[in-house]
Length: 134
Image 1 (cartoon, rainbow, N blue to C red):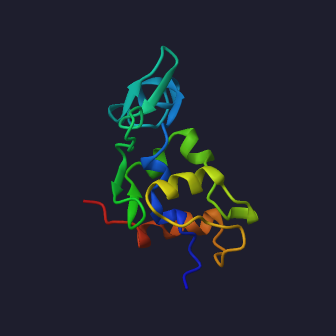
Image 2: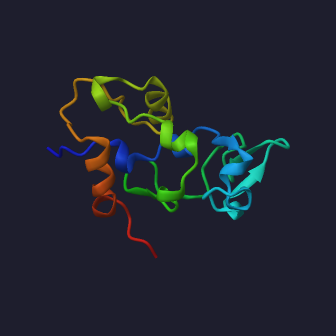
């Protein structure tokens, strides 16, 4: 069994929730989120393209949710993505994660599952488990 947290290759949250953030997180506001992957919501808010619709899917998500996925802008992702806790991290369940996983027919993650990957170690493993960059 892998010690890698399943969140690191799942992507269900990226294809379920709207990802909205303060406009200045985008490149043209001094931030690092690629502006061409965002769309305006209000004069002060933007969202990741593809996430402000009924069938949400972030434009930066590559792959199929629930199998091998990767974020094309992982190092430059907006704050909601950085703040969304991996389910099981620090022994805590993220119920929002489980709702997204259910949408794709994936089983819920529990706090006592046998994975022990810290956020730093999981981040270091991204290139190993995710799809290769084209």
